Length: 255
Image (cartoon, rainbow, N blue to C red; front, side):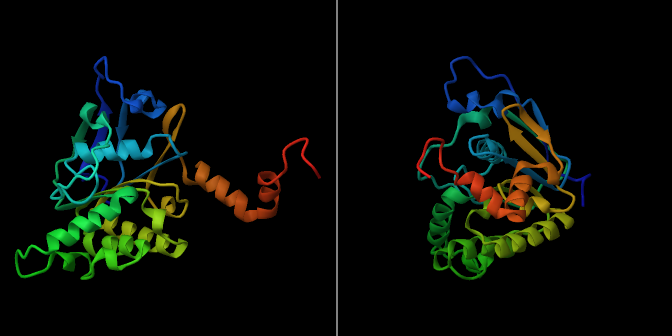
C-alpha cells in the first residue's frame, strides 16, 4: 500500500455561521467531526442509517471537485439540487500528489449518471467512444449490479481517487467480493478509496481503516468489532435464535 502518497489527507470542520439551518448540522457525526484523517489507501465509513455516512461522503466529494450527483470531475449535470451545504464548511487537506483519475459513485443517483453518460457518448469527440471507457456497453443496457461492476472493472484505474457511497446496494455477495478484489488491487497500485458502506464483505479489505459513526461521533474500529460484522455473524451462526428474537410476538399477544 502507498500510505505515504495519499491524495486526501484529512477533512476538518470549520466554524459554522449562525443561521445555517440545514438538518445535517444536528447530526452527532457533524457536531463532533473535528478532524477526520485518512491514513490508508482504503477508508470505510460504517454506521446505522441516519448516522451521516452519505452526508460526509457527499461533502468530501463536492469539496474535492466532483459533481454532487456523481461521476467524474468532468460531469456537470444536475437533476436535483438536494445536496447538503456541509461541504462549504469542510477544509479538505490534499496530499502532494494529484490523482490522475477519479469518480464519485452514489447508488441513489447512479441512474442519472448513466443517462448523462449516454448523452455525452452521442457527442463524437476523438477516435474512441466515451462508452468504451466503461466496458463498451451502455450502463442502461445492464442490470444495476452489472453496471456497478462495469464501472469499477473498466473505468476505475490506478492512481485515482474514488469516493463511493454504498456501492454494495445493487451487488450480490459474489459481486461484492468482485468489487472488494478490485478495490484491493487498485489500492496496491496507488488508488485511494473512501467508502460509506453497510457491507461486512467490503470492509474486510486487508489494510483498510474503518471509522464507525455513532451518536458519540466517530472512532477507528477493528473489523471484527464493527456493528455490521458482529450482527451479521450472529445472524449467520444461529439464524433460528435471531429469528425467534426478531419475530417474537409482542407481550400480551395471542399464542
